[in-house]
Image (tube, rainbow over all chains, first blue to last red; front, side, top):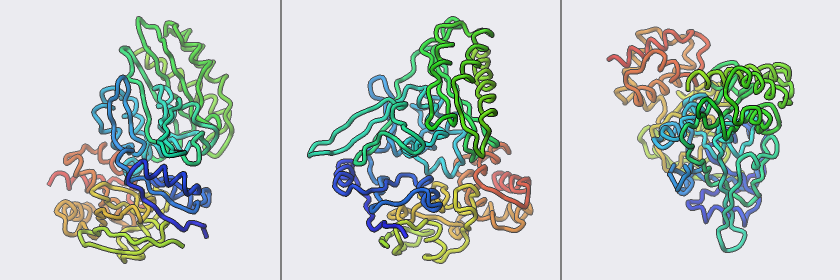
Length: 290
Length: 154
């Protein structure tokens, strides 16, 4: 049996971070779509207190603030897909959501939960990385609310491990509004479109002007203990004309820089092949459609 | 084990139950509230047999903590018996022969209800996408899609 013996459902952020600080041993419940099966399978052990954060209004909603879109941690994948600010400025997140699990799960699963789960194959992580997202964290170590933010790639430490401090809550994701000429693609590769954990995923983004890509960001999922930056691939693309030679070089750089493992979903060899081929396909698509 | 008392409406009926905090909404609906129309298939959100509506939004009740139902409106397949869209879908499933063993049917009907509320006249492809979170091992889906399409045309 679990040692779970306390349930709380705070209704404000202040209250939640105060209780986190005070109680210490707390399992956070957001959408529950991962927590429930992980707990049932014994992969996650409940701590003494289960804190349901879904009653905290400050953690919801999508707003534009200065040059950024701020998405509250509790916003569900379905809410993100339906939001006009997202379709206007961040259409990549709409297409990402379309490949996320199933309708029922998109209605429950939260963006913050997908991030805090820190799965190397987490569907939103690669797209958020290429969009230049950062996470907003809150805690209350003394009598004042303390907030900090962190670029998303720094947040991940390993499978299921993040830099979130024990008494800290992820409150929101901030994404800079992309500049003119911005192009972005996300490709998730698995065995079926719905309810699949990707064997690999690739995100590519940059500003395309006169056939040249700049401010390039590339990220890969499911090829390392965390989603990773495709830094060598970025270098192969930055400032270059997006022609056949550049695409070849970038696909090769991508294949060379990933070091996946073999597991039930794919062998390491296959993952490297797919990274190569899908990186090529994405870039060819970008070159052909702009 | 920590128990929690929750108040919610179950198919419109005000309901109060006491549940262990880690209990799923599915277990609560079946074993505490005694409504067994909602099915346990996989317990992992893969099959959709446990689909319910929470405040009108379809969810896998096996992935939902029962405590999260507190203060909210839960609709199960039994609740659709009093719902015009639910009745239309039920009739269309029968007419199309979309039910074989029947185990996936409650979840399919719940998800069809959600789909038709959001998109009253979906294309066949939109219907297929709409039920991508629901598995059927008997029908091959064709008759289920036929049924939802027929329900959308009435």
